[in-house]
Image (cartoon, rainbow, N blue to C red; front, side):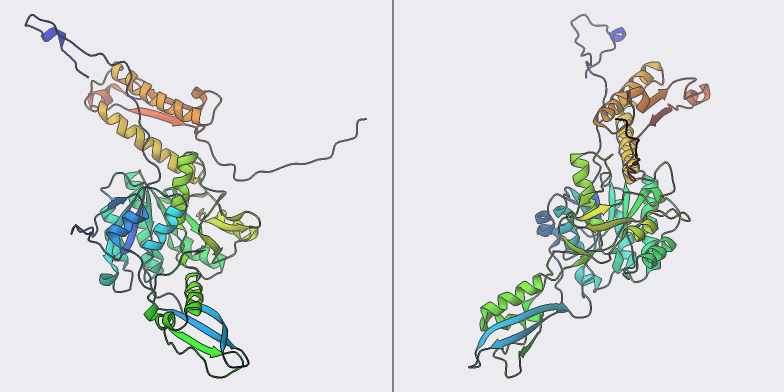
Length: 478
């Protein structure tokens, strides 16, 4: 836009000025851009650029692999083979089972978490590599993850925070300190939301919930949400054939025909049995915390319905079972806690429906303002969008002309959201209001001190969490 101060014209000639035809507008910011913080195989790309503690934006799993590599090799896998022989002692078939001896050795789950994120509808995201698998030495240090959290603070685009390796931190106290710091950062910046996993997984719902509520603290709770239990996924472990030991026996006794001691030797000895063994290893489900999958669900729901729609009653892809069976009764204790209000959203399996996200509360479950995840995230979106759009008016004349333009800009934005179903009300004036002006939101002293105060009220839609059907009999009338 070109403007000419007509009173300052002194030279004869023709002057042109462009008059803006449209008012300023508010552009909606992105709502589901997670920052995944954890350990990666590499932190230097093929061009030699270091990404150690430097957030990198990616849009696909392939892009992740090109910079950060893949998953660590699992070393605790084992395969058991039982041979079946014919009357002549020849091998005719084999029963093959694979298992994790003890527990998975790897604690670095970033790659698997990214798989679940994209599998459930995820899109652009940020990766923060706090260290490589080698420098991490097989353990997860909460100090490393804290550095990753600090590094994401200056980034403006991320709207979700996920610690992919958080549940492997050495103690629950350190883990919850880290998560409390994440909540504090969200509250400080007011432009992001934290997805928090339950540290304990004892298959005792009540114990896990109690330990979580004791550890998470009481501050900034409306900026986070928790989902339970862990997911047993369809993902396959990354492994090396030479590191998978074999145990071979014969049904009914006798000498085994196969002599390989590790899976790599079996490939040349008997290809059929090798394929059976490889398939058995690949079918071992990897147990993961749910936050990455939930971030994918949020991205998908935001894209198709809007951030004001609860990311719930949605099926999870890539999940074969759950680490704990949540019932109606046990979910009641998770969803509502009269004492602390720290709601825990359940993930449940329903016959004929699959595995569904069955909760949409923030950790501030007793709050009437921000009890629900979509309400909190909707306000974050509106606040950030309006904040960015209003930046153009900084240092503009603080008079009625500017106030009218600002109010009109915000009202147009909220009207569009109302039409999309984000705000409740039969008419726009019943769904929101925007106030600005001398004697309305500002005093003379405010104006003298350079303050332009805009007050915005909104009636967000809330999810129908409890649907109650009431039936009664009526008297026959004919």
